[in-house]
Length: 310
Image 1 (cartoon, rainbow, N blue to C red):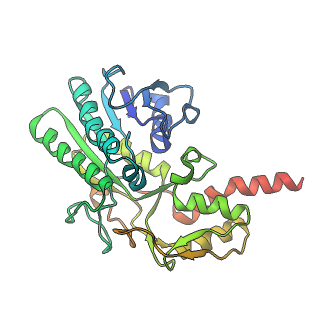
Image 2 (tube, one colour):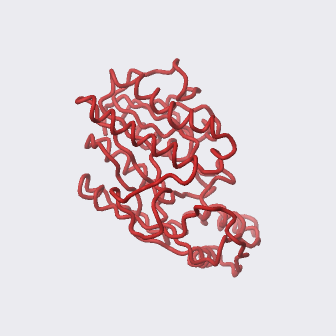
Image 3 (cartoon, rainbow, N blue to C red):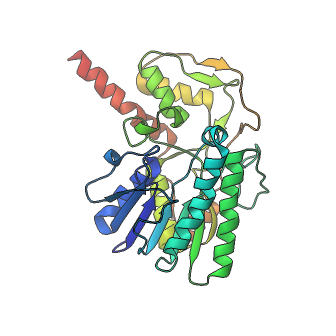
């Protein structure tokens, strides 16, 4: 993407800032964020930061392309306050589209993959149902996507359903803290010599996708002006036990996890995505394998250890 006027909502957050920074060298990029979880420290100097909410009306709306990533993006966040979560996730998306659709012809937003069942690989046309408030709010986004694509011929709206996105606390995921990916949380614990807490028996799987590949996928969907839902993952999955083993190898540790019962109902045990639809539509492929990604997550801790031994 080049020479476009781009708005990234949630633009100071983990995925949003990674995307904004990647686009900024060749585009005019505005990052809108209410700083609930994001921080402008994540953004490069080339990105224009605007503090504000997707629910507000005062931010710049005269843009060509919108990446709507602003959301309360976890089950826990919505269970704490369902009313606010629903407003942000549903009303916020409608407000962003309504304020920008007279200018923008392309809108790509963060959907959800948590409603997929435990029978991988997950396909975009699999039957889905909402078992949590978070899933209900995010599936409502898909219904509005269908409406806007049907009603406005000159507007392309696409949902991107991410699998398990990670980078590690050495990057822009650091500000998420306890909401960060499990692999990032476990790496931080294990680097301190602590045991990671694994829910269940460790056989659960996740399709881990590196945030740099997610940013590339978002750009590819916008470049092609796609509409509809697209999975963003790797097509491979690793169990929690395998994940801990890879972390031990990368950190040079030998730490056993601490197993605890799964405290949640409607919990996703198995995850692996079919990304054929995205690949065929754009040519996109993931470039960071999970073993390589784990090495990247753990590299800052290795550097600290070397510095401490000097």
